[in-house]
Length: 113
Image (cartoon, rainbow, N blue to C red; front, top):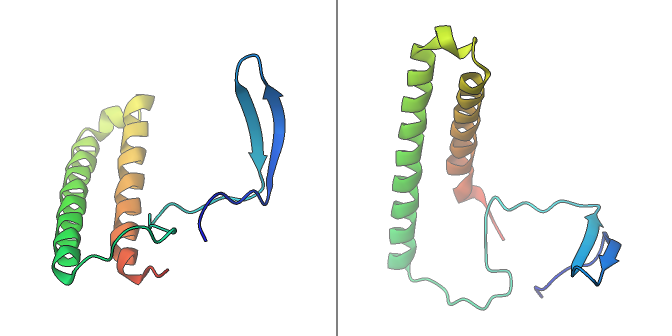
């Protein structure tokens, strides 16, 4: 169990002179929840799991608060948002990051092996 899966991976080009290998893949991998698939890590105690959970939620909460502040600040200056493309891009990026973080926080406890 574990290791690299070569199913769906095709070597396109090998350039031995420049040490370059280019591959194409016919599948994607979800990295939403990173886990130790090889089973080499020890199991965490209940106390360690609780501490890790608290740190994760606090960190995500701080990130979400900062993103909300950024969104409010960008919307406060909405006259310039739609005139200048970089400001509009920043607003969309902050909204996308906030939504992604909300999905992550709301779904992390439902993840299974």
